[in-house]
Amino acid sequence: MDRMQDPQHVTRQRRRSLIAAGALLAALSIAATGFEGRSVGARAGSGAQQDPVQDPKGRSASTEERIAATRAALEEWMEQRRLIAKLRAEWDEGREILQARIDVTETEIADLRERIAKAEEGISGFEEQRSKLERDKERLKEASSSLESQIGPLEQQTRQLVARLPHPLQEKLKTLTQRIPEDPENTELGLGLRFQNIVGILDMANKFNNEVADFPETLTLAEGKRAEVTAIYIGVGQAYYLSDDGKSAGIGFGGPEGWTWRPQDDIAPQVRQLLDILGGQKAAEFVTVPMRVQ
Image (cartoon, rainbow, N blue to C red):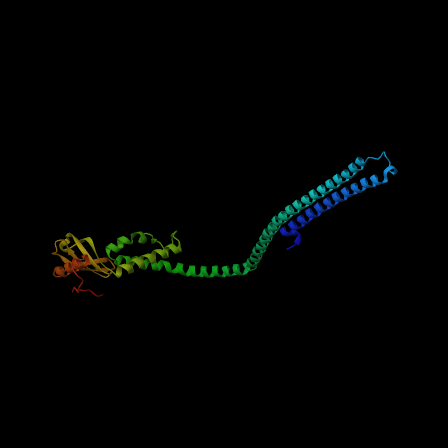
């Protein structure tokens, strides 16, 4: 650290200056007093040889004036020293503030330079990135053209599949199936939404196919009678029903025209047992029921 900036060094200098000033003032006072004493002794020894008009008090007054002038000069000198010390302290404080501002500005400049360097790197790679995007765009156009040629047949096949699904599942899929355009060549639906509909239908059908569930339904039984029954669906390919009175039962399966239900009252006890197991009234066990395999 600069000695001029060291607070202890400044304090020691001030103390030395005050001591020197006090010593100088004391020396001047002693010298003036001694001079006055010698002048009085000389006048007393010379007797008549001294000028009787001269007044010792006049010479003493002159000495006091010189002492007063010296004291005033010392006081002014000390005041100047205090002013210098104050200005130096203020300058040190101002210099610290200025240095702090300079440090902040330099940090901001360094940050700005770093950002400029990154921006220049980004600009240099822009052309390469743009070329890559153009190539990706062309590939996507080709893929989109291929998908557009496939979406129509897929929607037709999906319609045929939905017709073979169980009635409860068809009800769940109504929102999606209604979005399938009647004319694939004349629709405002986007390609992405059309594929999303197909994927949604297939996903729900697959989930239903992995479950065993029962639903209340109204079926047309023998002799054209309508009856309230409970249908048990084993996935999307096989089902059984049991009337509410437990007397009528049958088997069902899907086809191109929808579901076909065939009465088979002799399996009513087995179907009743299946319903009890699904409802939790009985523990799970193997139940023998007829199965139609296509």
